Image (cartoon, rainbow, N blue to C red; front, side, top):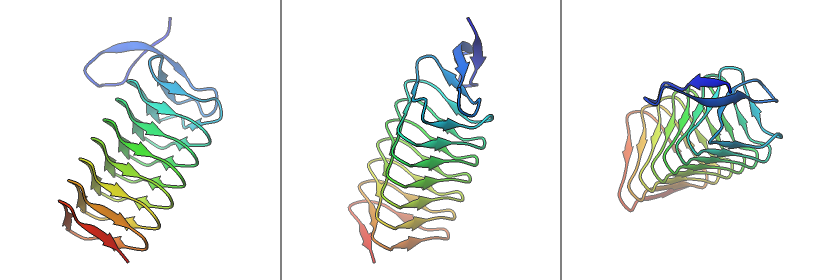
Length: 159
């Protein structure tokens, strides 16, 4: 049995290298053969990645997160908790999407952006920089949020 340490405090766990890309996948995670998991990317916990999704660079998908459709998670991005990334969404650079957050449609979350709690970023929205989107906040349409901004509560940004 092959084991790999995902550095999540659980030590080496049963894992394998994904057939398409060679990235490490814990045996507890489910990753379709159609998915690309780059050589330095990691999928672990009970995460599921399917359809034509891509996890590359040093990206991590873990816990109970779902990444599917044509979504891409790359760079040093992390998708964790019960987060969902789907559609043609991109999560990249040092962005974090976690808790019960969703990023979908053609949305982009990048740089050092954080999307968490029950927040949603969707449509053609762009969230980047040191932005925090949380609570029940919604960023949608063609909205662009950047800089050192916090969007929280029951806010809907739609342009």
